[in-house]
Amino acid sequence: MPMDFPTSSVGISNGSSDDNATTLTRNCSRDSVVNTVLFPVLYTVLFIVGLSMNGLAVWVFFQIPSKSNFIIYLKNIVIADVLMTLTFPFKILADSKLGPDYLKVIVCRVTSVVFYFTMYISIIFFGLISIDRYQKTVNPFDKAKTLSLLWVKILSGSMWLLLFFMSLPNMILTSNKPSSPTFKCADLKTEFGLKWHAIVNYTCQVIFWSNLAVVTFCYILITKELYSSYARTKSSNTKGRKTVKINVFLVLAVFFICFVPFHFARVPYTMSQTTELFRCSLEIALFHLKESTLWLSSLNSLLDPLIYFFLCNSFRSSLFKLLNISIPHSSESRRTQKCNIENTPLEDSSM
Image (cartoon, rainbow, N blue to C red; front, side):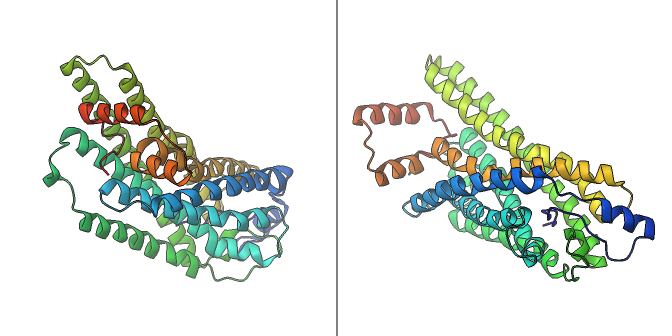
Protein backbone atom coordinates (compact mmCIF):
# COMPACT_ATOMS: atom_id res chain seq x y z
CA MET A 1 0.00 0.00 0.00
CA PRO A 2 1.10 3.60 -0.43
CA MET A 3 3.18 4.77 2.46
CA ASP A 4 1.59 8.09 3.36
CA PHE A 5 1.30 7.25 7.07
CA PRO A 6 4.03 9.82 7.74
CA THR A 7 6.23 11.12 10.43
CA SER A 8 5.33 14.41 12.02
CA SER A 9 7.72 16.64 10.18
CA VAL A 10 8.94 17.45 6.73
CA GLY A 11 12.57 17.38 5.78
CA ILE A 12 14.89 17.79 2.82
CA SER A 13 13.91 15.81 -0.26
CA ASN A 14 16.28 13.47 -2.06
CA GLY A 15 18.24 16.21 -3.76
CA SER A 16 15.94 16.39 -6.74
CA SER A 17 14.53 19.87 -5.99
CA ASP A 18 16.19 23.18 -6.61
CA ASP A 19 17.60 25.43 -3.89
CA ASN A 20 14.37 27.39 -3.43
CA ALA A 21 12.29 24.24 -3.06
CA THR A 22 14.82 22.83 -0.64
CA THR A 23 14.69 25.99 1.47
CA LEU A 24 10.90 25.91 1.42
CA THR A 25 10.87 22.27 2.52
CA ARG A 26 13.29 22.97 5.37
CA ASN A 27 10.93 25.62 6.73
CA CYS A 28 7.78 23.60 6.07
CA SER A 29 7.58 21.88 9.44
CA ARG A 30 4.55 19.80 10.34
CA ASP A 31 5.36 19.77 14.05
CA SER A 32 2.50 21.17 16.09
CA VAL A 33 0.57 20.37 19.24
CA VAL A 34 -2.09 18.72 17.09
CA ASN A 35 0.37 16.34 15.44
CA THR A 36 2.65 15.62 18.39
CA VAL A 37 0.08 15.54 21.21
CA LEU A 38 -3.55 15.36 20.09
CA PHE A 39 -3.28 12.62 17.47
CA PRO A 40 -0.98 10.42 19.60
CA VAL A 41 -3.54 10.66 22.43
CA LEU A 42 -6.39 9.75 20.06
CA TYR A 43 -4.44 6.81 18.66
CA THR A 44 -3.60 5.68 22.18
CA VAL A 45 -7.32 5.51 22.97
CA LEU A 46 -7.92 3.57 19.75
CA PHE A 47 -5.10 1.18 20.55
CA ILE A 48 -6.26 0.37 24.09
CA VAL A 49 -9.95 0.03 23.29
CA GLY A 50 -9.42 -1.51 19.86
CA LEU A 51 -6.93 -4.12 21.05
CA SER A 52 -9.29 -5.14 23.85
CA MET A 53 -12.33 -5.42 21.58
CA ASN A 54 -10.50 -7.15 18.73
CA GLY A 55 -8.72 -9.48 21.14
CA LEU A 56 -12.11 -10.49 22.48
CA ALA A 57 -13.39 -10.90 18.91
CA VAL A 58 -10.50 -13.23 18.05
CA TRP A 59 -11.21 -15.22 21.21
CA VAL A 60 -14.88 -15.56 20.26
CA PHE A 61 -14.21 -16.46 16.62
CA PHE A 62 -11.87 -19.25 17.68
CA GLN A 63 -14.95 -20.87 19.24
CA ILE A 64 -16.98 -20.62 16.01
CA PRO A 65 -16.42 -23.18 13.21
CA SER A 66 -16.03 -21.83 9.67
CA LYS A 67 -19.25 -23.34 8.36
CA SER A 68 -20.49 -20.39 6.30
CA ASN A 69 -19.05 -17.85 3.86
CA PHE A 70 -20.15 -15.07 6.19
CA ILE A 71 -18.11 -16.37 9.12
CA ILE A 72 -15.03 -16.88 6.95
CA TYR A 73 -15.22 -13.29 5.72
CA LEU A 74 -15.64 -11.96 9.26
CA LYS A 75 -12.64 -13.96 10.48
CA ASN A 76 -10.51 -12.37 7.77
CA ILE A 77 -11.66 -8.91 8.84
CA VAL A 78 -10.89 -9.51 12.51
CA ILE A 79 -7.35 -10.67 11.62
CA ALA A 80 -6.86 -7.51 9.56
CA ASP A 81 -8.17 -5.35 12.41
CA VAL A 82 -5.76 -6.90 14.92
CA LEU A 83 -2.80 -6.30 12.60
CA MET A 84 -3.91 -2.71 12.01
CA THR A 85 -4.27 -2.07 15.75
CA LEU A 86 -0.75 -3.37 16.39
CA THR A 87 0.68 -0.66 14.11
CA PHE A 88 -0.70 2.15 16.30
CA PRO A 89 2.04 2.14 19.00
CA PHE A 90 4.72 2.76 16.36
CA LYS A 91 2.86 5.79 15.01
CA ILE A 92 2.14 7.05 18.54
CA LEU A 93 5.78 6.91 19.60
CA ALA A 94 7.10 8.34 16.32
CA ASP A 95 4.67 11.26 16.10
CA SER A 96 4.99 12.18 19.79
CA LYS A 97 8.79 11.95 19.52
CA LEU A 98 8.90 9.63 22.52
CA GLY A 99 10.71 6.90 20.59
CA PRO A 100 14.20 6.78 19.04
CA ASP A 101 14.78 8.63 15.78
CA TYR A 102 15.07 5.39 13.81
CA LEU A 103 11.51 4.50 14.79
CA LYS A 104 10.30 7.02 12.20
CA VAL A 105 12.10 5.01 9.53
CA ILE A 106 10.39 1.82 10.71
CA VAL A 107 7.02 3.56 10.50
CA CYS A 108 7.69 4.65 6.92
CA ARG A 109 9.12 1.35 5.74
CA VAL A 110 7.01 -1.22 7.59
CA THR A 111 4.12 -0.30 9.86
CA SER A 112 2.50 2.26 7.57
CA VAL A 113 2.51 -0.33 4.77
CA VAL A 114 0.89 -2.89 7.09
CA PHE A 115 -1.70 -0.29 8.10
CA TYR A 116 -2.86 0.35 4.54
CA PHE A 117 -2.59 -3.31 3.62
CA THR A 118 -5.02 -4.26 6.39
CA MET A 119 -7.34 -1.34 5.62
CA TYR A 120 -7.92 -2.53 2.07
CA ILE A 121 -8.25 -6.13 3.19
CA SER A 122 -11.17 -5.01 5.35
CA ILE A 123 -12.68 -2.98 2.53
CA ILE A 124 -12.54 -5.93 0.12
CA PHE A 125 -14.08 -8.36 2.59
CA PHE A 126 -16.91 -5.98 3.43
CA GLY A 127 -17.64 -5.91 -0.28
CA LEU A 128 -17.69 -9.72 -0.34
CA ILE A 129 -19.95 -9.79 2.73
CA SER A 130 -22.39 -7.46 0.99
CA ILE A 131 -22.55 -9.75 -2.04
CA ASP A 132 -23.04 -12.78 0.22
CA ARG A 133 -25.86 -11.07 2.15
CA TYR A 134 -27.53 -10.03 -1.11
CA GLN A 135 -27.41 -13.60 -2.44
CA LYS A 136 -28.92 -14.87 0.81
CA THR A 137 -31.72 -12.34 0.46
CA VAL A 138 -32.69 -13.05 -3.14
CA ASN A 139 -32.09 -16.82 -3.03
CA PRO A 140 -32.07 -17.79 0.65
CA PHE A 141 -32.44 -21.52 -0.04
CA ASP A 142 -30.40 -21.79 -3.25
CA LYS A 143 -26.94 -22.88 -2.16
CA ALA A 144 -25.92 -23.65 -5.74
CA LYS A 145 -25.45 -19.93 -6.44
CA THR A 146 -23.10 -19.38 -3.49
CA LEU A 147 -19.42 -20.26 -3.44
CA SER A 148 -18.40 -23.43 -1.63
CA LEU A 149 -16.43 -23.04 1.59
CA LEU A 150 -13.28 -24.28 -0.17
CA TRP A 151 -13.56 -21.65 -2.90
CA VAL A 152 -14.26 -18.94 -0.31
CA LYS A 153 -11.09 -19.89 1.54
CA ILE A 154 -9.13 -19.87 -1.73
CA LEU A 155 -10.60 -16.48 -2.62
CA SER A 156 -9.74 -15.12 0.83
CA GLY A 157 -6.16 -16.33 0.62
CA SER A 158 -5.84 -14.89 -2.89
CA MET A 159 -6.94 -11.45 -1.68
CA TRP A 160 -4.30 -11.49 1.07
CA LEU A 161 -1.56 -12.58 -1.36
CA LEU A 162 -2.57 -10.06 -4.04
CA LEU A 163 -2.49 -7.10 -1.65
CA PHE A 164 0.67 -8.37 0.02
CA PHE A 165 2.61 -8.50 -3.26
CA MET A 166 1.21 -5.10 -4.18
CA SER A 167 2.36 -3.71 -0.81
CA LEU A 168 5.79 -5.36 -0.60
CA PRO A 169 7.55 -2.98 -3.04
CA ASN A 170 6.59 -0.07 -0.77
CA MET A 171 8.81 -1.65 1.88
CA ILE A 172 11.64 -2.60 -0.47
CA LEU A 173 11.69 0.65 -2.46
CA THR A 174 11.93 2.80 0.69
CA SER A 175 15.65 2.20 0.97
CA ASN A 176 17.14 5.71 0.90
CA LYS A 177 18.91 6.92 4.02
CA PRO A 178 17.33 9.80 5.94
CA SER A 179 19.03 12.99 4.78
CA SER A 180 18.00 14.96 7.87
CA PRO A 181 16.71 14.34 11.41
CA THR A 182 13.42 15.76 10.15
CA PHE A 183 12.17 13.98 7.06
CA LYS A 184 9.01 12.70 5.44
CA CYS A 185 8.38 9.18 4.23
CA ALA A 186 8.65 10.19 0.57
CA ASP A 187 12.29 11.18 1.21
CA LEU A 188 13.14 7.53 1.85
CA LYS A 189 11.72 6.32 -1.45
CA THR A 190 13.77 5.61 -4.54
CA GLU A 191 12.77 7.24 -7.81
CA PHE A 192 10.86 4.14 -8.87
CA GLY A 193 9.47 3.88 -5.35
CA LEU A 194 7.75 7.26 -5.77
CA LYS A 195 6.22 6.11 -9.04
CA TRP A 196 5.08 2.83 -7.47
CA HIS A 197 3.64 4.81 -4.56
CA ALA A 198 1.45 6.81 -6.94
CA ILE A 199 0.41 3.76 -9.00
CA VAL A 200 -0.66 1.77 -5.95
CA ASN A 201 -2.44 4.77 -4.51
CA TYR A 202 -4.68 5.04 -7.58
CA THR A 203 -5.16 1.27 -7.56
CA CYS A 204 -6.34 1.49 -3.96
CA GLN A 205 -8.74 4.25 -4.95
CA VAL A 206 -10.26 1.87 -7.50
CA ILE A 207 -10.49 -0.87 -4.85
CA PHE A 208 -12.27 1.42 -2.41
CA TRP A 209 -14.73 3.10 -4.75
CA SER A 210 -15.68 -0.17 -6.46
CA ASN A 211 -16.30 -1.84 -3.09
CA LEU A 212 -18.22 1.18 -1.83
CA ALA A 213 -20.45 0.92 -4.91
CA VAL A 214 -20.93 -2.81 -4.26
CA VAL A 215 -21.77 -2.28 -0.57
CA THR A 216 -24.21 0.56 -1.26
CA PHE A 217 -25.90 -1.17 -4.20
CA CYS A 218 -26.23 -4.52 -2.41
CA TYR A 219 -27.72 -3.05 0.76
CA ILE A 220 -30.16 -0.89 -1.19
CA LEU A 221 -31.37 -4.03 -2.98
CA ILE A 222 -31.45 -5.97 0.30
CA THR A 223 -33.58 -3.30 1.94
CA LYS A 224 -35.91 -3.17 -1.06
CA GLU A 225 -36.28 -6.97 -1.10
CA LEU A 226 -36.95 -7.21 2.62
CA TYR A 227 -39.59 -4.49 2.62
CA SER A 228 -41.21 -6.11 -0.42
CA SER A 229 -41.27 -9.34 1.57
CA TYR A 230 -42.96 -7.55 4.48
CA ALA A 231 -45.56 -6.13 2.09
CA ARG A 232 -46.26 -9.51 0.44
CA THR A 233 -46.73 -11.26 3.77
CA LYS A 234 -48.54 -8.26 5.26
CA SER A 235 -46.23 -8.49 8.25
CA SER A 236 -46.77 -5.95 11.01
CA ASN A 237 -43.48 -6.76 12.74
CA THR A 238 -42.16 -3.24 13.30
CA LYS A 239 -39.31 -4.61 15.41
CA GLY A 240 -38.07 -6.63 12.45
CA ARG A 241 -38.20 -3.58 10.20
CA LYS A 242 -36.28 -1.55 12.79
CA THR A 243 -33.61 -4.26 12.91
CA VAL A 244 -33.23 -4.10 9.14
CA LYS A 245 -32.78 -0.33 9.28
CA ILE A 246 -30.16 -0.58 12.02
CA ASN A 247 -28.17 -3.29 10.25
CA VAL A 248 -28.20 -1.52 6.89
CA PHE A 249 -27.28 1.79 8.49
CA LEU A 250 -24.49 0.23 10.55
CA VAL A 251 -22.64 -1.24 7.57
CA LEU A 252 -23.03 1.85 5.41
CA ALA A 253 -22.10 4.14 8.31
CA VAL A 254 -18.76 2.37 8.80
CA PHE A 255 -17.92 2.95 5.14
CA PHE A 256 -19.05 6.54 4.91
CA ILE A 257 -17.64 7.66 8.27
CA CYS A 258 -14.38 5.74 8.25
CA PHE A 259 -13.33 5.52 4.60
CA VAL A 260 -15.02 8.07 2.34
CA PRO A 261 -13.39 11.24 3.84
CA PHE A 262 -9.92 9.70 3.70
CA HIS A 263 -10.25 8.66 0.06
CA PHE A 264 -11.34 12.16 -0.93
CA ALA A 265 -8.26 13.58 0.80
CA ARG A 266 -5.78 10.95 -0.28
CA VAL A 267 -5.26 11.78 -3.95
CA PRO A 268 -4.22 15.44 -3.51
CA TYR A 269 -2.11 14.50 -0.48
CA THR A 270 -0.25 11.80 -2.44
CA MET A 271 0.36 14.30 -5.23
CA SER A 272 1.90 16.67 -2.69
CA GLN A 273 4.20 13.87 -1.56
CA THR A 274 5.32 12.66 -4.98
CA THR A 275 5.59 15.98 -6.85
CA GLU A 276 7.02 19.44 -6.16
CA LEU A 277 4.02 21.43 -7.37
CA PHE A 278 2.59 22.36 -3.97
CA ARG A 279 3.51 25.32 -1.81
CA CYS A 280 4.37 24.79 1.84
CA SER A 281 1.09 26.13 3.22
CA LEU A 282 -1.00 23.90 0.95
CA GLU A 283 1.20 20.89 1.68
CA ILE A 284 0.70 21.35 5.43
CA ALA A 285 -3.06 21.85 4.99
CA LEU A 286 -3.29 18.60 2.98
CA PHE A 287 -1.22 16.83 5.63
CA HIS A 288 -3.58 17.93 8.41
CA LEU A 289 -6.59 16.90 6.33
CA LYS A 290 -5.06 13.52 5.60
CA GLU A 291 -4.15 12.90 9.25
CA SER A 292 -7.67 13.76 10.41
CA THR A 293 -9.34 11.49 7.86
CA LEU A 294 -6.74 8.80 8.50
CA TRP A 295 -7.77 8.71 12.15
CA LEU A 296 -11.36 8.17 11.02
CA SER A 297 -10.15 5.24 8.91
CA SER A 298 -8.35 3.86 11.96
CA LEU A 299 -11.62 4.06 13.84
CA ASN A 300 -12.76 1.17 11.65
CA SER A 301 -10.77 -1.24 13.82
CA LEU A 302 -12.93 -0.24 16.78
CA LEU A 303 -16.29 -0.22 14.96
CA ASP A 304 -15.93 -3.61 13.27
CA PRO A 305 -16.56 -5.58 16.49
CA LEU A 306 -19.91 -3.80 16.74
CA ILE A 307 -20.76 -5.12 13.29
CA TYR A 308 -19.82 -8.64 14.37
CA PHE A 309 -22.13 -8.32 17.35
CA PHE A 310 -25.18 -6.95 15.53
CA LEU A 311 -24.88 -8.91 12.27
CA CYS A 312 -23.66 -12.31 13.47
CA ASN A 313 -25.91 -14.35 15.75
CA SER A 314 -23.17 -16.98 16.17
CA PHE A 315 -20.73 -14.33 17.38
CA ARG A 316 -23.27 -12.88 19.80
CA SER A 317 -24.25 -16.26 21.21
CA SER A 318 -20.62 -17.36 21.62
CA LEU A 319 -19.74 -14.06 23.28
CA PHE A 320 -22.55 -14.39 25.82
CA LYS A 321 -21.50 -17.97 26.50
CA LEU A 322 -17.84 -17.09 27.02
CA LEU A 323 -18.77 -14.19 29.31
CA ASN A 324 -21.27 -16.39 31.20
CA ILE A 325 -24.13 -14.06 30.34
CA SER A 326 -27.44 -15.89 30.30
CA ILE A 327 -30.20 -15.04 27.83
CA PRO A 328 -33.82 -15.77 28.78
CA HIS A 329 -34.76 -18.90 26.86
CA SER A 330 -38.20 -17.66 25.88
CA SER A 331 -36.84 -14.41 24.51
CA GLU A 332 -34.19 -16.23 22.50
CA SER A 333 -36.74 -18.70 21.16
CA ARG A 334 -39.04 -15.90 20.01
CA ARG A 335 -36.19 -14.07 18.34
CA THR A 336 -34.95 -17.21 16.58
CA GLN A 337 -38.47 -18.04 15.44
CA LYS A 338 -38.85 -14.59 13.93
CA CYS A 339 -35.54 -14.99 12.08
CA ASN A 340 -36.69 -18.28 10.64
CA ILE A 341 -40.10 -16.97 9.57
CA GLU A 342 -38.99 -13.67 8.10
CA ASN A 343 -35.68 -14.95 6.74
CA THR A 344 -33.74 -11.77 7.50
CA PRO A 345 -30.30 -12.33 5.91
CA LEU A 346 -28.55 -9.30 7.34
CA GLU A 347 -28.01 -11.28 10.49
CA ASP A 348 -26.29 -14.64 10.21
CA SER A 349 -28.25 -17.21 12.19
CA SER A 350 -27.41 -20.35 10.26
CA MET A 351 -24.93 -21.86 12.68
